Image (tube, rainbow, N blue to C red; front, side, top):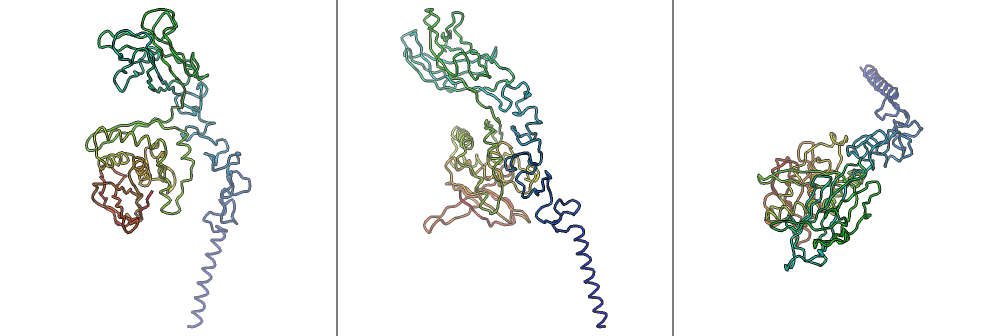
Amino acid sequence: MESKAKIFTLMIIGVLMGSGINQYMYDKDLDGISNENDAFPNDSTEWKDSDNDGIGDNNDLDDDNDGYNDTEDLFPNNAAEHEDNDLDGIGNNADLDDDNDGYNDSVDIDPLNDIALNFNLEWIELIDKQNNKANTPVIFYLYQNDEKVHRFDDDGAPWKVPWEELFYLNSNFEINVADNIEIHTFTLIAVNYKFRNAEEFDISDSNDSYRTVINYNLSTGSWEKGNNGTLDGSLDELDENDDARVFINIKTYNFGYLKSYGWEFNTISYKISYNFDPSVYSFYKNQPHTIREYEDYVSFVTIEEEAIIEIGLKLREISQEKEFDNLTEVNFVISFAQSLKYSEDNITAGVGEYPRYPIETLIDQTGDCEDTSALLISLLESLGYEAAMILIPEAWDGYGHAAVGVSVEGASGVNYILNENQNNEISYYYAETTAPGWKLGELPDLDSNEAYVYEV
C-alpha cells in the first residue's frame, strides 16, 4: 500500500510539472499574452511595440515614433496623426473640416476656428437737439445684407438718451458668420424710437443715406475704420438736424461649441444655451483622468472655471425671476444636472473608469454618477452653497455610487453629519444626480447607506 501511495504522488507531480511546461511553452513570461503574439516573450512588463523600435509601449514615450510624446499625441498609435482640432475623432491630416464648422479646409479662411463677430456699441451722442425734452428714446437695428439680425436696446426697451451729451451704451451682439466668405456686409441704423413717426438719426458720413454700411474683412480682421471707430453723421456737411455720433467696436472671436440644455422642474420646461471655448474643453480633455484614492474624485470639481460660473449665474437668473427660495433653487440646479444623459464609461470613453471634468460633462452632455456629481458640486459651490462628494462603495452588489451632499437651510430627509469640531456640526443632505425627479434628501433604494463624505 505504501508503494502505491508513492507512485500516485509521483504521478500527480508529473501532471503538475507537465502543466507548468505547457504554460511555459505557451506564455514564457506569464503575462497573459501568448508567445506568438508577445513582442517581448521574456519580459512580463511588455508585450507590444507599436513602432517596432525595440522599446515596449509601456516604456516608450512615443509609441508611433512620430516625434510627439504620447501624453500630447491624440493618436499615439497612428504615426500619420497627432492632432484633432475639433475633437471629432478624425485627425487633422485626414479631416477635411478641422474646425467642424461646415466649410471645407480648402475654402475656410480660418481652417482651425469657427469665426464669429462681436459688435459692441460703446456710446452715442445726439448732436442736434430736436425738442425741449431732456432725452429721447433710441434703439439700433443691425442688418446683414437684407436680413435684420439684431435689435440693440436697453433690455427690451429703448434707451433714454439725453440730447447733446455722451451716453454710454456698452451693448454687445455676437453673430456666427460664414467662414468661406471674406467680406461680410452689415448695415447699422440708429432710430429715434418715438411713439409715432419713428425717425432715423444720421450716423453716416455719406450724403446718400442716414445708415452706415460696414464691410468686415475676415482675412484682415478689420472694417473701414480698423477695429473700432466713430460713425459721425455730421461729416456729410448737410444740415438736417438729425446728426448723431456712435462709437462701435467690431472684432472676431472663435465661435466654439454652442450647446443647448432643456429640462423640466416642477412640471415647467426650461432651456438655456452656452457657447463653450473649444480650447478649454481640449485643456480638460488632456488632463489626467486617473483615480487612486476615493478622495481623488474631488479633484474633478472645478468651482472657479469661468464657464461653470456663468452657467451657474444663468440658472440663478431664472431662479430669481421665479422667486425661488434657497432650497428650491438648490433643487432647481439639481434638476439641471439630472437632465444630462446617464452613460457608462466603458461605452463613452472605452475604459472602465473615466471621471470627467464638469466642462467635459457639459459639452459631451453625458456622464455617469461621479461626473454629474462633480458638475453639481461645481455649480452649487460657485453659487455660494456648501456641497460635498458622497461616495457609497457598496451601493449595490459589486457597484459603488457617487452623489452630492448639500448643506442648505430648510432641507429634510437623508443627510450625513460631519463634526468639524465639538461645537460645529454640518449636515449634508443627499442629492441624486443620475435620474430626473429626485429632490434633496431623497435616497434611492441602495444596499448600503454607509458613505464617505469629502468636503470641497
